[in-house]
Image 1: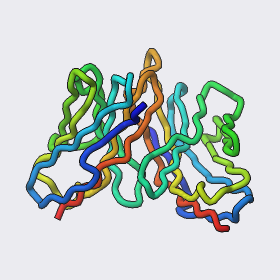
Image 2: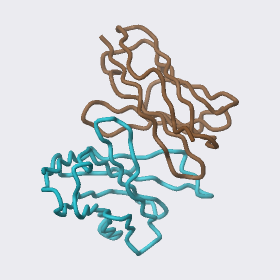
Image 3: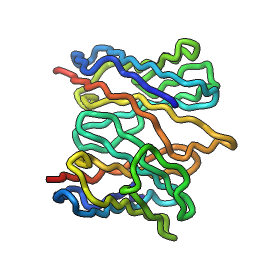
Image 4: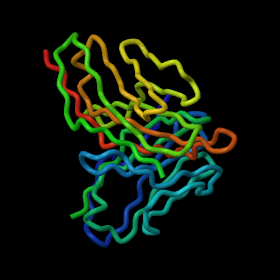
Length: 110
Length: 119
């Protein structure tokens, strides 16, 4: 049984560019949440997707947007990248409460 | 809004000994879960233990146990018989439960404690 998978594992972008990160949830899970984890810090909640809709959002600007597909997989898009967007982006899937995390996508913005 | 505080940035322990990691939280909610997660250098966040706020009994999972003091808003993690594989960053996390038990997948994490187990 595959767990939560994320791609790419690492990527480097320059300021002003746009990035798309992808997440496939654990089998049977219908809900996907995204988190940003700066180096040496705890993860911060970005938003959650359920039934292809954004259900709740953390304190992140509109440059951060997402999408959920009918197969429950999800994308996180970040526009107009800033140096401060450099972080590990974690995806978590859940089914009735418990969250299972992927290994993350490490984004470096130069 | 909820806050979670881990006051120990780093801890170390000898193999086979016991260590306790501290966590306090602030909330006005009555219906919530508390978690400890482990994040090794491989980056994947792994659930260690979960505590439901309505349960008075402290949760245990093999060598891991918690001391949940609801009135004091304290939630410490005890690791017994520490092993080299326990070396990781440990995060305390809070999850508010909304009507119907929905969490919206939102965890509020503390700053983390780096635990090093020495041979």
